[in-house]
Length: 100
Image (tube, rainbow, N blue to C red; front, top):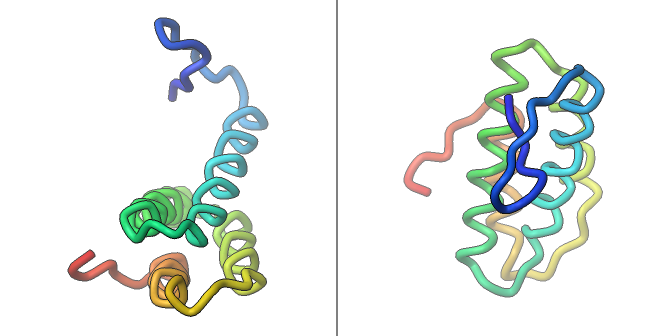
């Protein structure tokens, strides 16, 4: 697993905690992006959360997935964002993105 540390440089993640921290940061960014005014950004956030949650399912990390679902449940969003949030919740709980 690699994480970008500078535009022209990559660093291997040496331990599980740094990997978990990177997942948490990514999830926070994706959840926040679900409130963006641009639907394309919200669609990208749904797909990003799907990727994270798929990884959690494959590795058996139910705790992280549950935390993402809780963050989504706590999210207060304008009406135009609700469809994207519901899609994100469905995929986080193990559903499919369908035509997104």
